[in-house]
View 1 (spheres, rainbow, N blue to C red):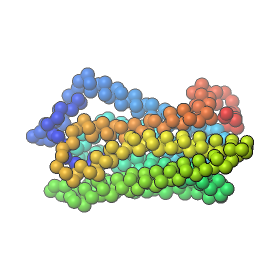
View 2: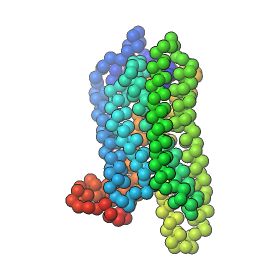
View 3: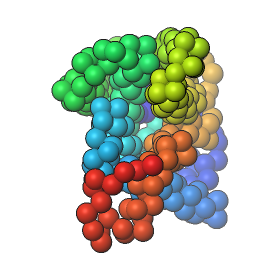
View 4: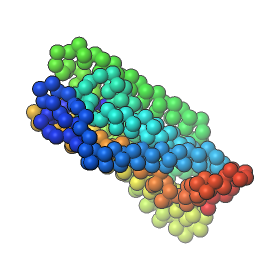
Length: 324
C-alpha cells in the first residue's frame, strides 16, 4: 500500500527521474535499473515456483493431508498470489512511483499488497494456535484442531484480508476529495490497518510461541525416558521449531516496513525513496522464503519436491507414498 508519508522529492531514482516541480516520474533506463528489474523478475519466478511446489505437494500426497499442512497450504496460496499479482504490479508501478501518481492502479496495487500480506500473517497466527494445542494440549489436539476448524480459520483469514483490501481502496478514493492529507485516512491507513494486519497478530504469535517453548522444555524432561513418547516429542518440537523460523523470517521481513508506516507520518522527517523501495521489497521477499524453510527443515517436503521436479508423479500413482 502507499502510506501517507513525507518523501524526499529531490532524490535520483535508478529507474525514474523525479520532477520536483510537477511531482511526476519519467522513465530513465539505466544499467542499474535493468539489473534491478532482472533481479525482481527472478525473485517473482522463484516465489511462484517455490510456493507452487508446496501447494502441489500438500494437495497430491495424502500423507501431507493434516490440519497444520492445510494452514501451510493457505499460506503458500497467499504467497503464490503475491508472486503472480503483487510482484508485477510493484515492478511496473513501483512504491515510489505510487507516492507521486496516486491513480486507481496504485490503489488496486495497495489493496492486493495489504490483503495478501494480512492473509499471510493471519495464517501464521492460526499456525501458532495449531502448534500451541499440539504441544501444550496434545491429548485434546485432535478434537480442538480438526479439518472443520481449520477450514473455518482459512475462510475467516481470507475474508478479513479481503475486507481490509476493500477498505484500503475506499480510503484511497476518498482521499481524492481531500485538499491535503485527511486525518481519518492517515489514521486508517497508517495506524488502524497496520495494527489489525500486523502488530496485534504478531503479539499473539510471539506470546503463543513463548508458551510453546516453555511447555516443550517441560514435556521433554517428563518423557525423555519413554521411547515412543520421546519420538513424538521430537517430531512436535521439530515442527514447532520450523514454524517458529517461518514466523521469525516473516517478522524480520515485515517489521521494518510497518514500523516506517506507523511512525513516520506523525513527524516532519522525510523518507528517502530508495529506503521505502527497499523496505517494500524486503517485505515482499518473505513470500519467496517460506518454501525454502519447509524444504530445509522437513524431510517429507524435500522428498515431495524431488518427486515433483523429477516428474516422477506423472509416471505413476504415488499419492499414497510414504515420505520419510
